[in-house]
Length: 370
Image (cartoon, rainbow, N blue to C red):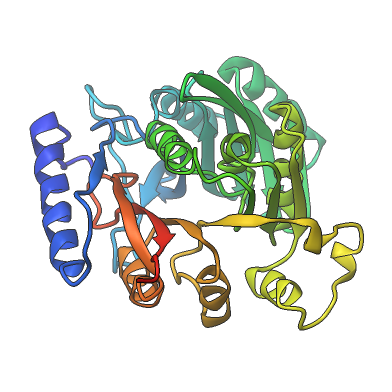
């Protein structure tokens, strides 16, 4: 990890390579010129997790290289710290935390993993994961650690969770001249690259500004996009299946004074069945689906992309906003969606520098019959 060249020039070279590959993979589509949103070359990742690896009785941070089972210890670089792609706050926390782990048996005993969750403003939750039960002695030392690091501490072991401070941070992101606030819980999914996330939010809002009507959002997570997109529509119906994300999304809608969005805990397959009238759902008993006038659907699916039933549902909307973390499955889905829709805008978001991965965005509108 520390041997990578994190210079601006090398960052641009690796991004150019990914863009060239993307152009080849999407050559069969009539794409508009991609809008490219870059990442900072360093300190862009707001969350990270590390193994704790012991050599000669000394604990080290460690990671696994792709395809390798044995982790390798990280060495601190005097310029960039232990983890150059990690946020500045993560790199600030790593040395004193490791020192405390090695010095204090209550913190280090049977500790096997450490997770960091940080924000642009410097808030932090540090999660310590153990192969043993955590007792009051651990609690006392965790409280000292909380004070010395000025970070919230969470201890986890089998069927046990102890919290010193709180188990979440509140991120603030500016997009299109407005600030949005998000509760991010240590076990919940969040976008790892905050600066690129800001670009995604702004781009999605710009694409849909003139859509009007109502919005159906699938895979809404913690409401990351919901809070921003709600301003462009009369009403929003957002769905999410993960309990932690649903709870955070409800909190974040209230935190950002969004009062025109309804949230239901349902999978994309279930909402497809509900909208097509296949069967009723008790979770929708207080929501009048027929009262919605959907003009647009927004999807941000997992790497597997959209399944067949969801693809069929999505293709019935006048406008489609699609954020993808996997260009390959996006391409597969676009093979169907471009039968009925035109790709009006296409964007590339470099969420994961120095990896083959790219985040993409597509704005599609229905073809006009001739």
